[in-house]
Image (tube, one colour):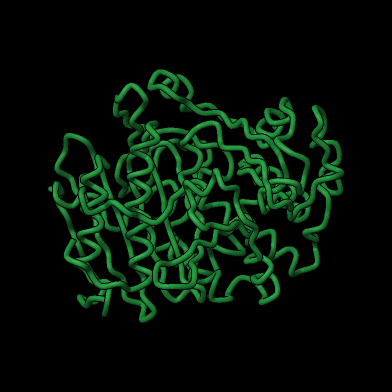
Length: 405
């Protein structure tokens, strides 16, 4: 991969929300007035980052115009600090559930990457395999060539595949298309109508389409639908009983907070009910997401060699660092620096109405997940939202005491 990279950005904000360390959450705290519920599994607080700190950070997020916030910190001792802020539904007093379901969107890419590397561990495929080896003729036309594209490049977003996922930019488009369904083949065919963003291995560009192709490869390698493989290989072994793929069901299991999209017009629309195509459709809870990163980084899912391969990162382009300052991309994992030294691992996600930020220490012994139930079409508001959420993640992982901000 070259040091001067080209990049492609997802067509719409809703497919991925990228975060970075916060620098300006303090101003929001002064105006915070949200209703909060803060709990610990055993009534105890973490030695550094305490319940009051989590409450304050959740409140800061709510003050930025986010309808509902749910945050969970799982400590090395197994204690969970949980904070919620705001309401579960606009116009109602119902609080955000502390264990509510939400769409995790691109966080599901870490699940897919783990599954692919499990198959590598078993000798069933190689990261050096070309796409054409498993899916002959699928990546072809307009300069796209599956013979020159590898599994590793798909995992690391260095394939050059262009994104053209369906979506909506107005309330009218949402109501018109929220129940549309697509096969993986249809999603890939949309991308094949475009030239690649760069030749495989010569740049970096976030590609949802690349992970759709990985799912098709898993289907071919295992002879089973990839969601069944995720269920049997990852979710069940880790006890992630509250993580599921809803398929053609547009509603979420209860309890959940509703998700809202604030469109460019300023209109706040409840977009909870929709069918999300392919990998981005996973629904989970903060406890389950923390359990996944704990199990992955703790060595429960991959061999030491495969986990090291997963954590071999490349830099993201400078223009992308506005979202991930200092960030580097591995195989379905993002490495970001900690303010206290070292780095943490994550894979954030954003679907219309639901934004997820998460992080785990290198050994997975301390994890944090934040779910936000409002997404914005306005870049400035998105930046402020992500700054504050990333600050929460950083301070929780560093176990940094409150500053009384």
